[in-house]
Image (tube, rainbow, N blue to C red; front, side):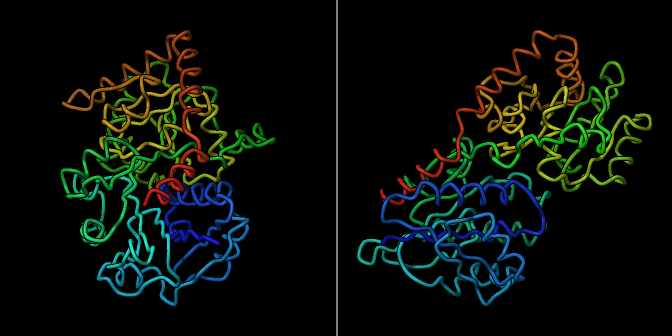
Length: 375
């Protein structure tokens, strides 16, 4: 029996985000697509018992769950300095740089380590992270450069960016994610829309108000959007206080920008599916899963010309140039174009739906299995 050990600790991240969703989706798909004679085991840092139960519920078919004696914070530091290893030998796959990267013998013992680099934000926009996080990412990439047998990235954009940072040779493999399978429309969609206070028309965006995400530029753009269409913000970091302050700074009246906070998957699916426009103004990104999920719900998308987003969209959304002081004006023009052109909105809906179908978790998992077979 061949075992693939997957580090799934990012599922338990206290801050919900794309890496947590990616980890859960990929791990579940790896279990479903395991070749005959292969099993998948998970590894997590020491966590409360309810977290282990949640993993068991969300990852049926996981052959075993190994639990470290160290909590995540301690394990982050230990692996950064090359201490502690996982039990067992053989194939190891990490859904981030959080991995026990150390010397091993792939040729003679069959040990192999693959890690994942989702973006290069720690280098391009270090202000978006804490100094400790920046230091950790840079240290772990150096360890990956030295010890990893393969480095998975979500886009050719990240592959090109990482090549300028580290000498990884031919070890980089592009394996994209896919729309989340948990963002399905619930049967009580109307009730949820009413509870969320969703208006008939609105612009939806995901993310906190920080420079890299471009949400501040989007809020400024709303001063030029026709018919007083509101902007709704979902996700961690879009607090009522921060949103109100940004809206006031832009000169927007009360109600033009509203925070939905962190939504459950059913609520997020409802908000995505009913949005008139989904805006993704990020100045830098490694992949853009929220944008892909908007495509999957048939919502017209406008996005920045960050290279990874252009790569992902492949002309399925309206692209907005980031550079210069006129970025908010160009965002507003793109939103107004969709709002005023029903035929364009309809076309964006269907080409977005088609684009989303090009990405599947099954396909991603099969590529991961093939990667480890190649190693």
